[in-house]
Image (cartoon, rainbow, N blue to C red):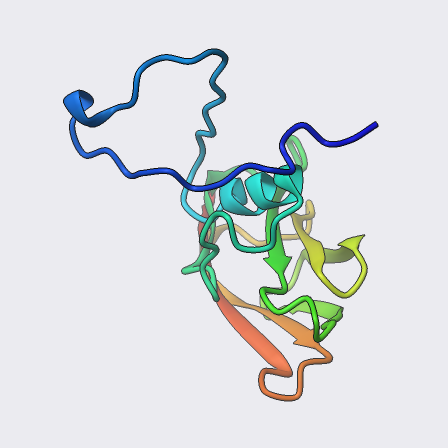
Length: 153
């Protein structure tokens, strides 16, 4: 079965409702927080690697305010290689704040990974300030460090 989204292409950017094209059928909208993976999801669904722009490095991993131990609190970091001709693996992830667990899940080996960052019940109360460090096989960028913020109530 062929992918009906395979031929998707960028048509225009509308800044006013009057600039929108005429309705021609079904539409899909992606909504979510900054760096939540909307562009990566769109690229994966359409089979393109750069239909939607993907930021090189997320700004921050934000846990907000939460209570440790009540329910598992996780944040997913989606890493996509924008140069698929040169496969890059995410080999490991570490958090500088004690009490966090990480898991690297390949969604497409060498191209796309989901890094799951989970707060355990061992996270201490108070302000969280630290980093999530990702280790890659990329010679130009072997490590990526992202700020981690939040407040444990």
